[in-house]
Image 1 (cartoon, rainbow, N blue to C red):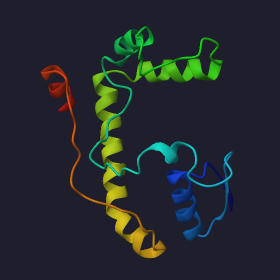
Image 2 (cartoon, helix red, strand yellow):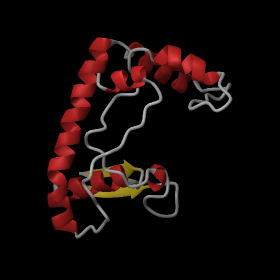
Image 3 (cartoon, one colour):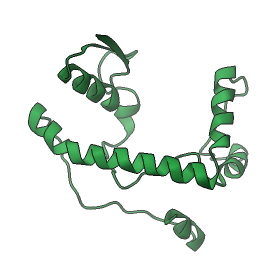
Length: 152
């Protein structure tokens, strides 16, 4: 079977590796001139297995509306967005409820735990070298409300 993987970032290359290992004929395509030069380039190389949370969460739609009008906003939406992007946004909003959040978070935690568990094998098989440390993650909060919300 021939499979085309779109994107040569961490996820694309790792997906291609496991597909090829399973016997597939894999081709990886990326718009950049080399691997890891798009999203994977600027994520600080962090493997945060415990920092798993869906973007679609209760309260996010109201926060997003506020963000749109902030001077230093964490969210920007181009005015002439495509119909596909509008559909994606509506689907995200539909998932901004407690039940969907719990379901999606559970799925993300399972895949995160799986990723953590197979990482030593991937390192041993491929010889990947990186400056990995397991010293935890520091989170800073401006208010007690933010800290309480992070525990949900």
